[in-house]
Image (tube, rainbow, N blue to C red):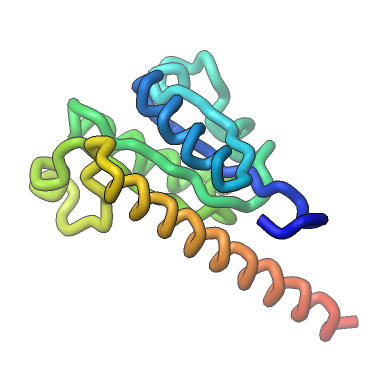
Length: 148
C-alpha cells in the first residue's frame, strides 16, 4: 500500500476462527484492515447483516460457503439481495467447490484449504475486487460532476 494512502478495509464473513485468523494475517501483511463477522452470528440474528454491510465503505468481502452447502448457499443469496450488499464485491470461498457447484451451478468460488497458492489467489481476487469498486466510485463521481 502506498504511503499516505488510506488503509482499505476488507470484510471477512466466515464460520471458522482459524480461517479468519489466517485471512486477517494475510490481509494485514498486505496493508489492509479487516472487519470480521461470523456467519452463524449473522444467520441467528446476533449481528445485523444489513448494518454490518452498511457500515463498510464499498469494498471486497471474502465470504465462505461452508457445509451444509445448500442452506449456506441460500443464505448467501439472501445476503447478496440486500440493498446494503450492492456496492460490495464478494469473493467466495468454500472447502468443496464440486459439492457447491452441484447446488449452485458453476461458481467462481475458490476451493480454500489454506495452502499458499490459495492465499495468493484470494489476495489477487481482493485486489481485483477493490479495483472494480474504485472504478465504480470514479464513474459515479464523474456522473455527479457531469450533472452539475
